[in-house]
Amino acid sequence: MLTLPSISGLKAFEASCRYLSFNQAAEELHVTPGAVSRQIQSLEQFLGKSLFHRHHKRIELTAVGRQYLAEITLPLERISAASNRIRSQQDKNALSLCVYPSFAIKWLLPRWADLYDTFPDLDIQMTTSLNPADFEAQGFDISIDVMAYGTNRKGYLIDRLLDIDTYPVCSPEIAEKIKTPADLANVTLLHESPRPTDWQRWFKEAGIEGMDPNQGLTFESANMCVQAAIEGVGVAIGIHELVRQDIEAGRLVRLFGISRKSGFPFQLAISRRTLKNPRIQALRDWFLEQAGVQN
Image (cartoon, rainbow, N blue to C red; front, top):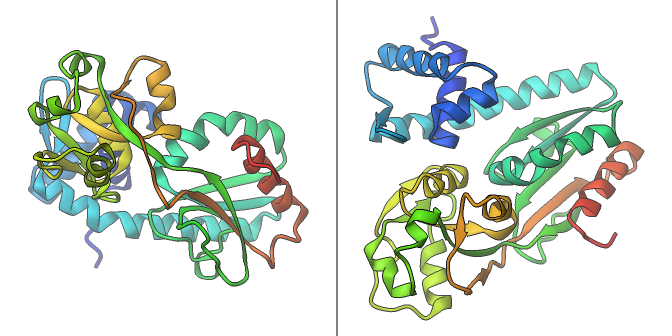
C-alpha cells in the first residue's frame, strides 16, 4: 500500500517553497493564506517533522524541509509531465512546454495573457524543470532551458532567447546600508542551489578580494532566493531579465554598476521533426518576438 500525503498539502508546500511566503502561495493556488497554513500543518503532522521555521514576516525551510523538497520535486514533475502527455494525446490542439522555473515565473507568466490572446484555440500546458527536457520520454513540444552558447543538439533547432546578465539586488531598506562593494561583508549573501557559483563569479568580475563569496544562506530555487531578497533577508544575485520588474516596482534595488554575463543563456529548443507543425512554428515566432530576437 502506498503511503502518501494529500496532494493539496504537497501543492501548498511546493508553492510555499518557491515564494517563501504563505500569502503568495495562497494567491497562486487561489485559496486563503490560512488554508495554505493548515495544509502545511497537516503535511507536517503526517510527516512528524517541521518543514518551515516561521518568523514574524517570513518563513524559512528547515533542513528537513529542504531535503523533502529535493526528494519530491522530480516525482511531482514526472506526474505533471505524464498528465500533460496523456492530455495532449486526447487534444489535437494541446501543446506542451517544459520551462526553466525562474524563467516561467518571472518572464513567461507575465506574458501569459498575451500568449492566450494570440493563440486562443490552443491548450498550452506548461511544466517547469531545472533539467533539460526529454522530448521523447515526456512528450514535450518546446523547451526553454539554460544551455551553453553554441549548444548543438542533433535533431533540434535551438534559438537563443535571453542572455543572463547578473548583478547584486536587495530590498530598498538594505540598499541604504550598502555604499560600496566592501559593505557586502556586513550583510547576508543569498545563494540559490541551481546556480551555486554566481557570487564567486560576480566577485571575480568586480575584482573583489578578501571576502568570502560562500557565506550566507542557500535556497532551493532562484525564485525563493529573490523573494528572500525582497523580504530583506540579504543580498542576492539577480538575473536582469527576471528581476527587472521587481526593480521597476521598487521591490528590489540594483547595487553598483557591475554586471556579469553568463555563457549559459536561456535558449528555446524544438525538435526539427515537429517544427513542421504550423502551430509550433507560430509559437516559436511568438517567443522570439517577445524576446526581441530577429527570426
